[in-house]
Length: 363
Image 1 (cartoon, one colour):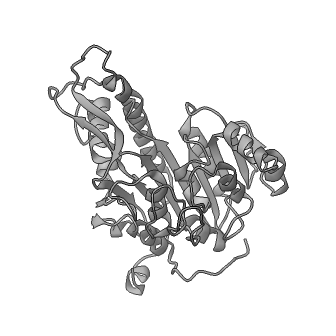
Image 2 (cartoon, one colour):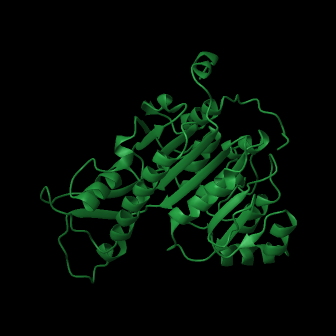
Image 3 (tube, helix red, strand yellow):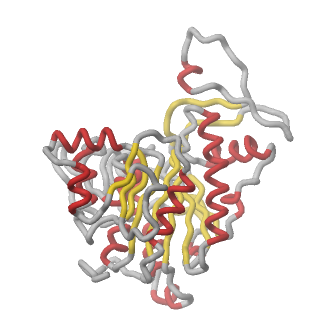
């Protein structure tokens, strides 16, 4: 990632991560067959630069989303369950690891996280928060307005409101008042965020909303910054409920294609996964859709009658490499077998930044 590479082209103005949570290669293969009755029909399978990323945590070959996303956004591995901190003894906090979102904040860019998982959950939280346990809901979300680096994430859109509010109340903190006092108006939906917003939090409950609409709103808000932006959009693609997971994978891929064609050429777009999942296509005829089990739980129920399907699913993460696909400035670095920690440095280099960043920057 040296100076010669950086000088070969203009740096990225914007970086968008599209993260398919648990979207390993087997899930992407199945999604293509599920959606199109043929392999290699997903947009992400045809992006111009493609590689594979290993996914291990510091203490385990099979990562959870906390350690997996920490590696991606900080360039350092940590233990399972830890968010953007170095590993530490039980009951103690590790050293905060600055994330790519926080680098963007320090350079004066706008930043956002969008997900259909709870906004205090591991993947979005690893972008903006530091905690020894992913279970510290209130302490995690409080870092939206009390950041360790920069002046905090600008746009948050997704579920988790009830649990976040309850956890903060246990800390004697009012969610709405704290957000508004920090200059982040809170809304009940992405659609409610006004066109002139520069910062916004849309926090609600339930994961079955239009993720594309939410991401569009985030891009609309973040694009107002002439310096550029960083955005992470996560879609939960766990296939413990195969029909839902594969339907989401097909829809997410269509949205990524739409954005990839719409965004200016100064935007680095990366599709990746934090870990793989124990889902496999085991049979089926070419040209036909695969039959799917109802869920991993139903499959494991000894009282349920046996049902023969083309796919097998076990309810758990797995440790194999996952797809990384990219286009835009710096995407040529996405090739071959990568460490999950390499992805952070690919994004940092695309912006033209070093790991010795300023502590703060004026907008």
